[in-house]
Length: 64
Image (cartoon, rainbow, N blue to C red; front, top):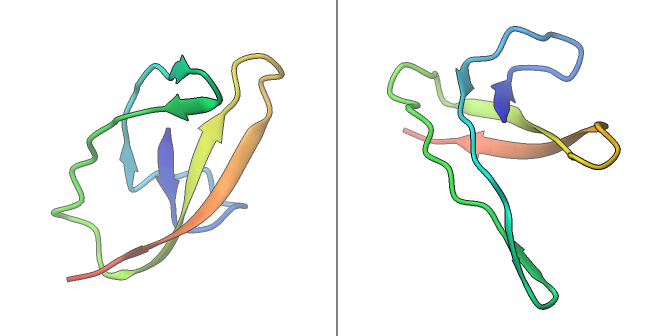
């Protein structure tokens, strides 16, 4: 997983790895990012789905 400033810019401001766990219809993934050096703003959480290896983007906000 990476936190990107823009979907078109591959330079991550933070990165982490994790493994998803499924229980019934619920999939969970716990990761920790060090965002202490990241400026407040809107970013994208980029994840890669293992079965199709496609990248999915989710908007996130980093606050003070």
